[in-house]
Length: 446
Image 1 (cartoon, one colour):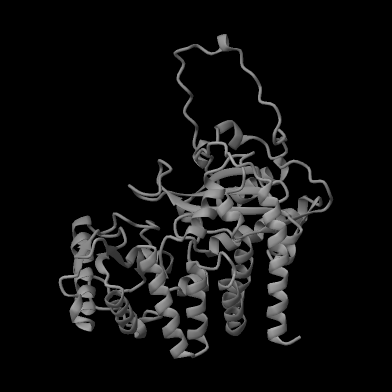
Image 2: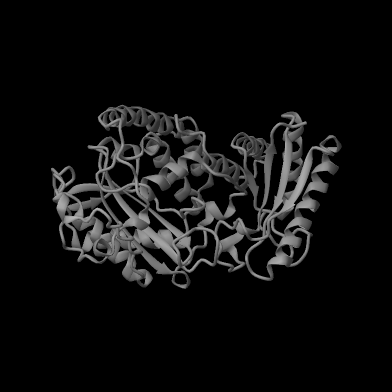
């Protein structure tokens, strides 16, 4: 089969899958149960044996007589999830979710895994890949009633059960900001695409030193980061739901694009750049294809294939996406303690071209920009504040040098490490995003 015929066949499969998914989505109740945070799992739930059965979804709630609860009693504070070593935490969470989910109508029931991500960045990492491999091993070894299949348009058409998960660096108080990150909070959720509901969930914590959060190739190479609605919908499906809640509709509607992106990321990581480009391009044409992972993937694939002119056009689309979403973070690496660009960085040779594109787009869209410098948390806070401002001012001067009309339409700020996305302070490939430069449109631009 030719590549064109293969892509056409994929599109036909996508269209058929869309009909099934939309039909299932229409059965999802319009009114959602108020979500609770993933940290609200009780200590009893978190410590329960994996073999203990969970109440069936939709079962009547136990009624407590009014006189049994004193009128002045305050609600008990939810205990934080248990802390376990990495391998034990993954096994514990997998057993809990697989055991507590209601029995499926058919056996073996199909499970697909929508690749687990970092809950702050949306990146896949060495840690999330390792978690997925362990979950697959647990299913094969101990749960014959399930069969893990790849996430694809074909498997989605069968409306399988789906696993989503986030692996998020948090402080001792279970927060993603405001202090040193001490744990990874691992949230694992199973959803049923036939009913459109969350049917099992487990949360545990892992000591920060026990996992490798280094992004996989496609995400490590991605030059641009911004908050993406598709990733936020994935995160909310895991972190902002409880058993019995409807699957977030924004996540549901993006599953076809997610399947193609998953295949594209795998192809890129394996060095199959032409195949990755075809898959990212096909994903772009789906209803949910307007997302950062797609634009980054197209740019990276074209760059790897040596198609410079097309890659430049793809980067313009990346910049446009960031400006449309009001936040454009660029991974520009500097020499330690300096405002000069790091020459050994993967894309250092293209920094000039990136800044030229950003300046040109800002002028053509008549956008004023706030240039914000960030640093990792290592080192004295006062020094980081000063360094982040100097770097922002340096980038500002480069923009204004490329496009003099931007003078008086940009402003530079330094925030040190106060807005870290990773916050581990490793100063390596795992926390590059903490050493970023952001461009935020200022409105109104006067």
